Amino acid sequence: MPVRTKLRKRGLDVDPLCPWCGIEEESIPHVLLECFCIRRVWFAVLGVHVTGATSFHASVLQILEGVGAEMVARFFTTVYAIWEARNACVFEDRELSIGAIMDRVRALEAFPRPTVLPRSSIHTGVATWNRPAAGWIKVNFDASVRRSMAGFGMVARDEEGMILAAVTLASVMMQSAGLAEALCLRWVMSLALELGFFNVCFETDSLQLFQWWRIRSRGCSYLDLIISDCRSLVSSFTLMDLLFVRRSGNTAADFLARGASSFAVWIEEGPPGLDTFVASDALASMPA
Ligand SMILES: [Zn+2]
Image (tube, rainbow, N blue to C red; front, top):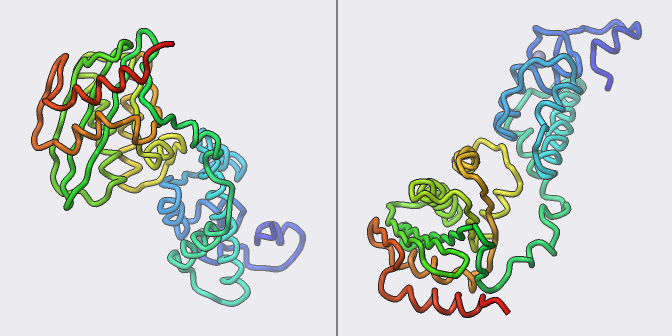
């Protein structure tokens, strides 16, 4: 890329300084990642604080380590938008606008791209409840939002389909169903640990939550922070997994969430009415 330090190396008589900050020399890592004028873009887009690295290559490896395909795509889309803005600044004398760069990233991202999950794995979401494998506890959970009030419900069952615990929680003001599902996951993970469940497969009927979990997003929204809280709890379990089931397989948790009016705990039983759902799940999942 014809940044100013490279042009000078080749004998061109150009100003070596960064067109944005005018303080440091314009190298590839500087203008695309490290210039303080541009760091806000990186924080807003990927939630990363760019620190000085030895090379652009090293920085890219550092930023993209362990992130999913979606974030890798977003990273390079952002690099492209920054370079476009740099050229507009150098050749058309346009001022740097962080907002314009972010709008450009969003516009480029609106083009059709491969979906995050292959369609087949979305459809693997089974329609009925399944018993956990031997030694595992299955925790179904759900959040229900009505008139900005959220109800959380969870039911833990063993490999026989018997209730180990059922818990409800009523919560105040919830901005969105997505946020409620993420908060519910964090709640249910902490709760499982308090109840002494260490080999747990959690099961949600929120495809959105399941995908957030799978994407390994490193954004900086409130939601990303909740998901990252959840990840930090993973190491407290011996074995932990998050599964997706269709709504028809999560009716017991849905029943608890809808009826949640306070914090309530039942051990080895549930509130009146839960039996019906649990019995039908146990029947449907009877080993052949
Ligand atoms: Zn600069």
